[in-house]
Image (cartoon, rainbow, N blue to C red):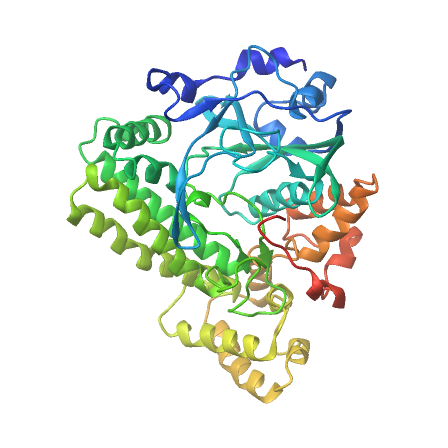
Amino acid sequence: MTTHFFRNRLSQNFFDHFKSSGNLFYSSVVPQPIDNPAWVSCNFDLADSLGISADELQDPSNLLLMSGSHFDDTNSISLVYSGHQFGQWAGQLGDGRAITLGELPVGESSELWDIQLKGAGKTPYSRFGDGRAVLRSSIREYLCSEAMHGLGIATTRALCLTTGETGVVRETIEPAAIVCRVARSHIRFGHFEHFHYSNNPQSVKQLADYLIGRHFSDWSDNPKRYYLLLQSCVLSTAKTIAQWQSVGFCHGVMNTDNMSILGDTIDYGPFGFLDTYDPGFICNHSDHQGRYSFQNQPSVALWNLNALATCFSSLLDTSEITDCLQQYENEYLSHYRQIMAKKLGLLEYTQSDEQLINQLLVMMANERVDYTLFFRKLCDFSEQNQSLRDYFIDRDKFDLWSKDYLLRVKAQDLGDEQRQQAMQQVNPAYVLRNYMAQDAIKAAENGDFSEVELLLTILKDPFVSRPEAEKYAGLPPDWASEITVSCSS
């Protein structure tokens, strides 16, 4: 593949749509290349789904493009937005280190996917930053976005990861890296906030019309299209947060500028998956008040949706906005309960299952039981296989719970083998624990990218146990608890 592939296929739909608005929505930006670039990893499965062959993706000219070398006919841009950070209005923000090359039409429907470089240098929104990303944080984003996709959770994707000889000054000098991020859209809650709080309702409307035209064209002539757009955001966000909670994922920085208008998971910074089940788990070392703790994520998402809904006040009346927001709780609980029921091997959630689920989670929290391992081992639990009780110190209490659980399971028209197979499709054998990412980072910083490739392989299909990844199938090592990540990670 040559860069002509991107020249021929990359459209500038966003650029063209807002061209008449000058630089109100974006700024034209030239990426800054990494010296002597090299591939860290290429995501060939994603490339194939985008209509790009392995040979095309790995063409030497694309190594240059994906490591920041700019071509004159690629109209790259960075977007402006604002937002609330840790609950406080932060004013204007923007793509401080993200540069969108264009939009790639995919499939027979020519659905557009953004192709974006993260870490490709300064933009007008970098403030005091250098616009670069370090290799360690780039590996974390590259792997976690694919891990979330493997878990069936809506997310940005990662096409490839490059590094080179350019150094970046953080606490020490670290190697720079660039992730090629692919997404249905990079529009955030903060985009609407930017124009609403700039007293620019016409731009709020223009942005809403753009989203509807690109993603929900069936609504284009619907008089309730703005209601449907806000409703869609509320419902898709509720579903995504329910999925986060069910797999033990903690985002870490749920600012409104890190929330996708489509409900996709976006911006992997100080994220973390639960090891032991701890509802109060705070994965972001910078989150001193615990605003974005694991248990707070559902309520924070609603807070953010309220902030977004305020921006629709020029498009909808108060009753319509209130109606949309009131749908969040039921939608979240419905998704969460159904997922948790499936994790327990139940065909359908019933109201009586609420106590069964809650009792289990309380026990797990009290005894600090490993979240992912417990549910994976639960797949094999039966009257004949009681080894799971060894995870608990208070085994009598677990036995009381398991007695009720087995009675509930037996009441279904489903055999043990069928139930176990179904449970193995919703209870992953692997999630991207921090220590796993750290193993890959240490090796990569020494020029060995094999661990990145191993993790990419197992996390793409995390429900399949793999002999080559046996070291990641058990409890994390003792040193894992010492890992800390912050907004700079």
